Amino acid sequence: MRTYIALAVMVLLCAFTSSWETDFTQAKNKAQQENKYILLNFSGSDWCGPCIRMKKELFDTPAFQAFADGHLVLVNADFPRQKKNRLPKNLQQQNDQLAETYNKAGSFPYTVLLDENGKVIKGWDGFPKESPEAFINEINQGINGKR
Image 1 (tube, rainbow, N blue to C red):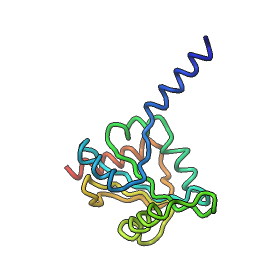
Image 2 (image 1 turned 90 degrees about the vertical axis):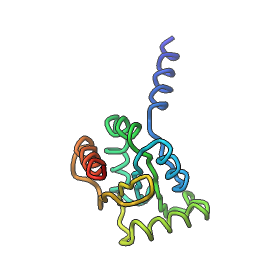
Image 3 (image 1 turned 90 degrees about the horizontal axis):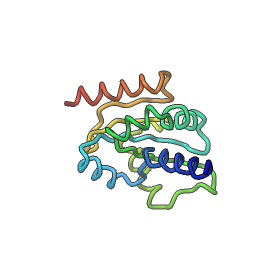
Image 4 (image 1 turned 180 degrees about the vertical axis):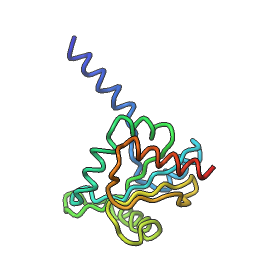
């Protein structure tokens, strides 16, 4: 019985976690349909220490997940270096184009808040020094300034 309860809790937790899109065009369409903003994160998932920390200590927190579910379409533009983690060519090309448009300096991690049409509202260079709640507050300030 305990096994079933534990399994049910895990399924529910997974159901309420925001998933990260990899296709930017689909993410823009979703943002337009759901009247949400886009949070685009440039990451080096297998080599960038601050990127890995950011995922764990910020994006994977319950507070951020709950906020993102109601307000954001999350997009991950990943730039892995290890051969085993290489992206399909079309996804790598898309991420290169996104970097050319939104991350010309090539910073990692680099996070950008966009409106539903892809217009930049606010950007964060590096790992945010604040708590998840403070980061959420900064996103809200960007959203409220846009309205």
